[in-house]
Image (cartoon, rainbow, N blue to C red; front, side, top):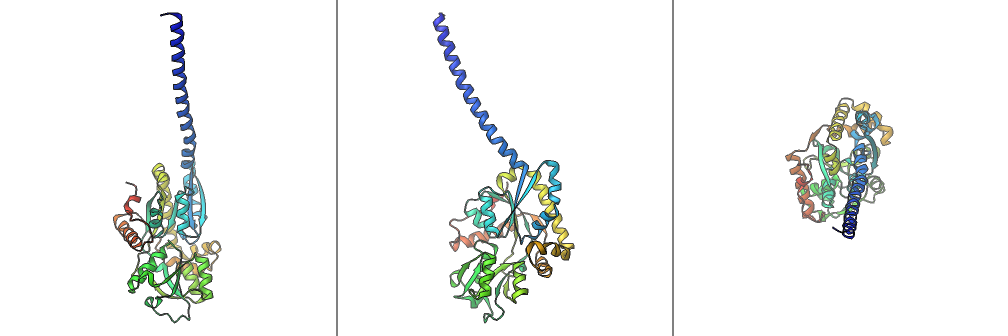
Length: 327
């Protein structure tokens, strides 16, 4: 082989090696670029909670979860939300890894394409939400709400409560005038007489009853189960089973403490929730504080809610609720 041919072959090999090296370096850069993000996810647990979510609020206050996760090098960050729909929007965009919401928000979130999984649930607590009217209201039954203004947080568990109560009373969803308001705004509208009824959960329900004499037109008993759910962002749940296990163990332990120390729990929650301890204690007694892994029965109930919301055109497409479960 001539010298020129050798030089040409050498240059060709060098060019090929350079290309391969560039590809390899690019792949390495890509892996380096994504690895820290993955490592960071594993080292930070971001929990979304609501002030009314008593168990998580107390878990945050007591610091037990942080102590359990410290040996794993996992930091816990907490973010407060006004209600479940807002919390799940944050989960949908990747701002939180874990949260606690009512039964309706996951349906709306799944319909919006949120990538989450049902992790655990609280056994039924239908007495912990209700449909309130002012103490001097002439309305005596749900059937009398036809044509009336009913306020509730859109996409929250009380959204399903309203749908279920109307159906039980022989009314259609279209028979009322829905007024979509978060709890604080709904309370203000309720006191001003701008709405005829208000669907709300505890402790806001107990506060309205005790502070302004609100009358319960109906509770969820006999109409809804009112499950509360712990949800996880799917990528986090898949990548961090040990963290999830510890998290649920601590939540269960906190629930047991609340059941056996209700008055003490109410006293600790009072300054956090800005309510009198007796109001909070009333609300606490309406929740079960018993949590279980998601099972076929509770998923079937969630499917019923999803089907009803699709039929009412409250969500844009039919859902298969079981798709939001780790297989």
